[in-house]
Image (cartoon, rainbow, N blue to C red; front, side, top):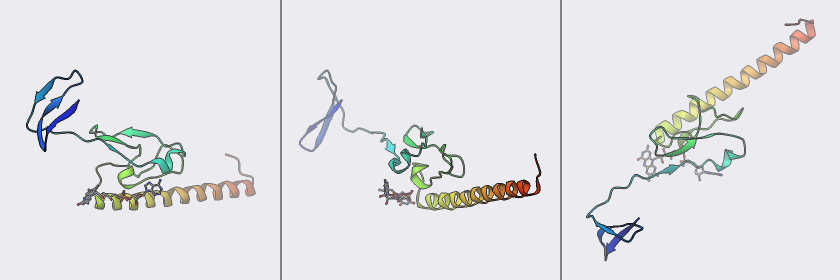
Length: 121
Ligand SMILES: Cc1cc2nc3c(=O)[nH]c(=O)nc-3n(C[C@H](O)[C@H](O)[C@H](O)COP(=O)(O)OP(=O)(O)OC[C@H]3O[C@@H](n4cnc5c(N)ncnc54)[C@H](O)[C@@H]3O)c2cc1C
């Protein structure tokens, strides 16, 4: 399908068959694609936006992706996020990353002490 334009005036829509359907205006629903090339090699999953308006990196509520240790924020995680939501999601992801690192350190420390004391679980 293509627009049939006379000068600067829309005349209609030209179908592949060549038939022109006269129209004075056309409303187009755009599609959006998050720029996720940077994290593609890390094994993240891409998901369709719930509204069907495009694709973004699949995340949980904290921005955690399906790849271990990888979080994303902003429009990469939500195509519809404005500046405030994008910034807030960055804060949420940062807190979740900090919690994840703390949990990892704690697990390692507990395992080291158990090994030192000969405790088996
Ligand atoms: C035309 C327009 C008008 C808007 N108006 C408003 C508004 O009035 N109010 C509002 O709240 N929001 C508005 N927004 C939305 C707002 O721009 C976004 O919410 C916000 O920029 C998202 O921030 P972000 O950090 O997720 O992404 P971005 O601001 O897009 O930052 C991503 C950055 O990553 C860089 N990048 C991408 N891929 C790579 C890569 N592979 N390697 C290195 N760098 C990379 C990009 O170049 C960019 O600098 C508007 C957006 C558009 C397009």
